[in-house]
Length: 183
Length: 227
Image (tube, rainbow over all chains, first blue to last red):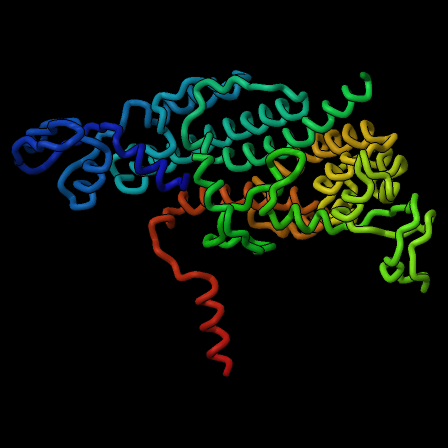
């Protein structure tokens, strides 16, 4: 999948906004949203929030994990654990990137937040590569990867599946000819 | 999702070096079965590699195949390099018309070098389809067959980390020095890895929504201006 497709899926996630216009309830396939009243908080899908924000119709209330304190803590937790820790949102990378790119003014210390998210991403990527390498070099048949997000999987999937296909081919031959000689 | 990449691989592309966004994913050759993939170009090219062979029987009226002798027949005991597909037909388990020796790059000495450090070996020079040809050589009833099978597997295991790391990290730097030492299968892997990192990078910079002109078109325009 393209990262843009993953982002598209992530836009279904709901987020709180503060509109500055009045509007009745919206009836969408994914549910009913609104009613919209100035300075009354309401939950909408992320794509709608981004769209309204781009037209200056609302302010986005950043999710409760998108702040410096929480992310600093998360980062140290991620660095300390040898396995993947549970992320506050299954689409943390996409949500933070969308919010920070479109509504950086609504997030306090946006630059710091951006760096922290990227740091956590890098930590997890390093962990993922280490895990993959361990799995391949010790020829394990499976690996347990809990709490891995879709974007992270998407980044390694094409490479890993192709590598495993090739490995499977070599492995099959190695085992079949060694055993046939032992017979 | 993986079926998506598989279906698009039916059109093989030959983009080497920097992967272009328009190029399809390429599957590593002969991912299925020992017989290889009939429609896979890599597999066909690998079976054209030559192997040293010795004739065990006299073959009549095919002397023209041997450029070194002018006789009408191929004498028994004649040594010749045959393409792998022909050697496979003549030297199979039932028909012992020829006997196959392992090519130089698969012999004991070379296997020892690979075991010592697989990462420094230039596998492209060892035959652009090192693994594929190696797997095909396993078809012959050879003394060192199981050693060869093991050696192929270990070589790939040892080289894997380096390929993964380089394809995922050295995105903007020059990697040609590294990729020239990879065998064709590894190259395909490398480019698959690089493509997903490139897509990610593009998304992070917020450019994946922008529709861009294809590389081909841009290059063509440049050439016209020179005229």
